[in-house]
Length: 261
Ligand SMILES: Nc1ncnc2c1ncn2[C@@H]1O[C@H](COP(=O)(O)OP(=O)(O)O)[C@@H](O)[C@H]1O
Ligand SMILES: [Mg+2]
Image 1 (cartoon, rainbow, N blue to C red):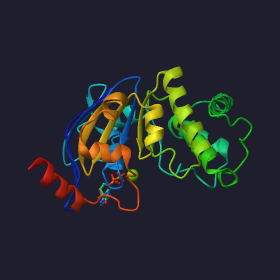
Image 2: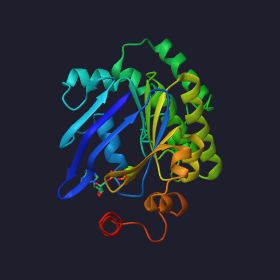
Image 3: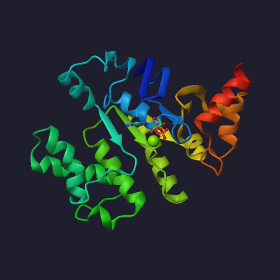
Image 4: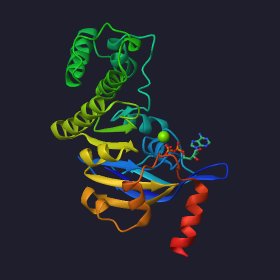
């Protein structure tokens, strides 16, 4: 569904994405793993056409997002759902209006139909009956689920999740993981999930991609990644990437030198 070719994105002298080449297959759950600052969110912004790269291309169903005009890009972005880091709900709107927002913004669908659609999406995330509550009345896990209902409201072909389980307790994490998997299987929605949660990743992924400060250092099925001999991949799946001694760009340069000299 998405093909990335030679994608480069720099911020000042930081190369956030360094000549990336990868694919995101239709109907699959692809998890992008990587420690803090490795370029995960930057990649999501490129995949969704929210930001232009310095060079390279992103093809969505064969259309090059990096050269598409506004109208074309808008059409394509309507096929995408996004669950942002931190849910990004509007705190002044109740749950119903939060979920209805994209429909009111992008379509002329009548109110009674909007009501049916919103009720259905809330049902899907197991939050029926919460229409009148405000976001502040919900737990973190519930907010993510409302964010997910909103991401699905336009019936997207693909959903992007930026760290959907960060900050959640294990039970809420399990609920979100199951939702991602169920939506993918029941509705055949392609899913791209950014995560630094290894357990979560192994539960939901069909394919895994590991980003390491702007480079893809490994790509493959869960099985292939588990059996990888690459030291950085091993450190990543066995160690705590966000642990007390996080990797830095200096560490990366050092490793590059000793491993790939
Ligand atoms: N808008 C921006 N302006 C400047 N630097 C940025 C911006 N977005 C990301 N970066 C830098 O690019 C690198 C990758 O960031 P990001 O994609 O947010 O990583 P991740 O989501 O994996 O934590 C980091 O070094 C970050 O500081
Ligand atoms: Mg991020």
